[in-house]
Every structure is written in C-alpha cells, then in structure tokens.
Length: 113
Image (cartoon, rainbow, N blue to C red; front, top):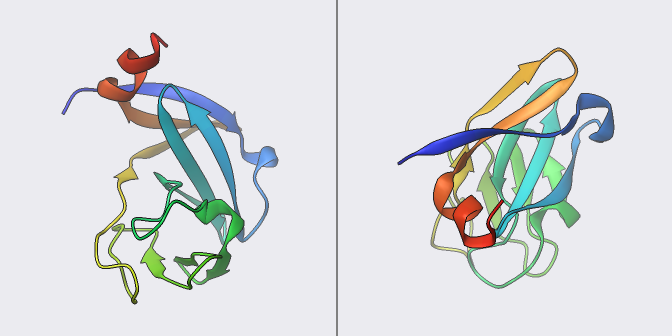
C-alpha cells in the first residue's frame, strides 16, 4: 500500500500517556504517547463510531470510552469484546520534535490533501 509521510504535530502537542485525535484527509487519526513512544492508529473504534483518543490508556492499550472495547496500540488487535475487528495502525517517525505518520495515499486522495 502506497503511503506518504505527513507531519501531524509536535511531540509537545501530545499528552503524556494519553491520546489526541487529528483529521488527515479522510482519515480520523489517533496519536497516543506511552512512556515517550508514539503510536498512530485509526481513531475510530471498530465496534461503534467512537473516538478512541477520548478513551483511557493502560500500558500500550487504549479502551474505547463508549463500551469498553480494548485495542493494542502496537498491532491494532481487538483485545476485548464488544470489538471483534482490529483497528488500523500506521508507522510513526520522529524528526526532532516533529511527529510524522505514514498515511495511506487513499486517505489523502479522497480529500485532495
């Protein structure tokens, strides 16, 4: 899958041991900082439309604020019901204080970004 490296924010824009949502083209992107490591996932729960960046963090997992489904930030795997489908994850690169994410071109073309 073709991707483009897109600057999303500064490391300082992200809460420590928390998440923040961003709109990148047609993608709802969630960035999560856990003990200095940054993960990028789809920000929408695979069970029901809810922003995971509004959820709770526990280690390298995020819990959906609506029904409590848990997801691995490393792999996107659904770790608990009611979610059974994974969420998409994306490669993160840091350049100084900048956070860049490899965004699939399909999301960028949809909005002409």
